[in-house]
Length: 188
Image (cartoon, rainbow, N blue to C red; front, top):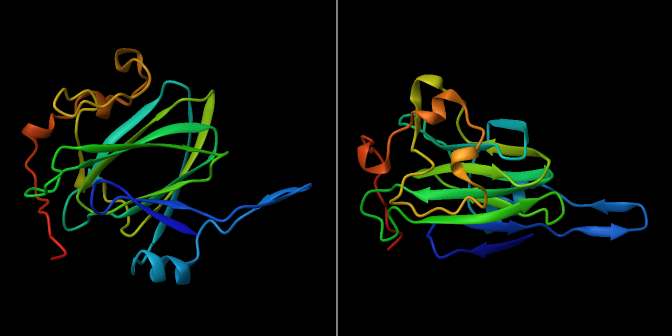
């Protein structure tokens, strides 16, 4: 696997080695050994999968302490625009986002550590989205930010006023309105 650093510290794009032949393709979607050697020690405890139709936007979500989550996300089929927003107080990239197209064709994965809000928009007719988490889901610790927060300047590649969203996501606050428990920890 190839690990690609991004302009936002902590966010990584992971490109697996894909072996193709006349039968199709094969790749390791996850190897604990390789992941620890190239990214670090993360103990994933839960795998999730969703299927969504074109126009669905899920997010921007995070889990509050003490149940914060690190995620490793990928698309099995279809195409999504996957977005992570830095919400770590004191971070030099606070409030900035990174958007990555993940698809069943490119097999890219997106590593999103604690301290980021996460969401995705479905760009294909349908998309099957999978992700690993290093903490179990705790509904009482749900947090989120409004996907159309004007301070974030996210181009979701589809009209947000026409997006298909959950009732919960329709009522999320702006970034400036959240009681933010995340703090940036510099590696230096």
